[in-house]
Image (cartoon, rainbow, N blue to C red; front, side):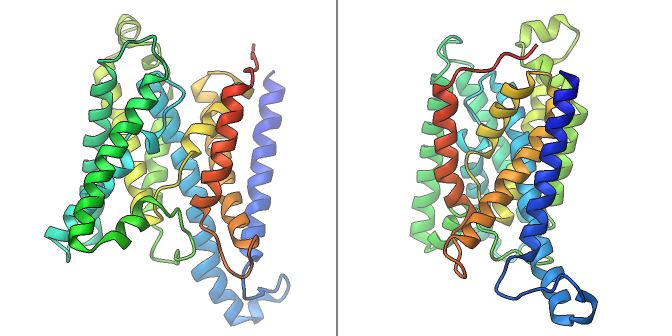
Length: 323
């Protein structure tokens, strides 16, 4: 079985590497594979546009996939992810407040407000699901969708009154990488750092997924671990929303597929989950760039269709048992 895990990680790594090379070569300007150093325009396009875009897609996908795993451990439910718990809508509400009250605020202030707002929204979701019957599995994502709708409606109403609907569409409904250039994606490295923190605390999150009573019995402080998880989820979501807009289904389908193939050893599956998330988002971005070339379809739109189809397949298919 260990050999199978290695083969899966190798396949994901090679697949992601191939997608990265393809992403660097796709675009209206043809960057020469040979003699690049003698083509100043090709170097400029590669360094300012295509490389940042590729990195943004990989970082967004990897961080969102890991955040989905953490959210599922916190909620003890495999059918939740940040985009179905009100987290991006909460981040957008914070961004909207900063835009209205302090439009000249620096980027780090907007980032901090978005992260805190996302943290509060996610904490509200966790408080709500604690009141639900533990055996009603599908009530948890349903509660998250309702909370997302309520917060999203508040955001939409405020944005409509303030004539800021275009901004809200960018934050919540795009998943768009066409505007990513050098200097406009670096916040996603913070999301990657938060995902790396989740890997460091993977064993704690795995124990938390057993339930607060079991975690306490094993000598763990479940409230402290839950707070750490909420910070990871909120920071990742806020950085993605600020940088490229929310991308749906990544944190839902990738962790479930990896768990079916590799089991529930969280420390062992987090790296393949991150690789799979990066590959899924980058692949969706490539499809969006090629299907109506030279025009583009946002990666979030592609994932909205393919992610829903994958999720339905996960619901209907029987899980594979891993020893």
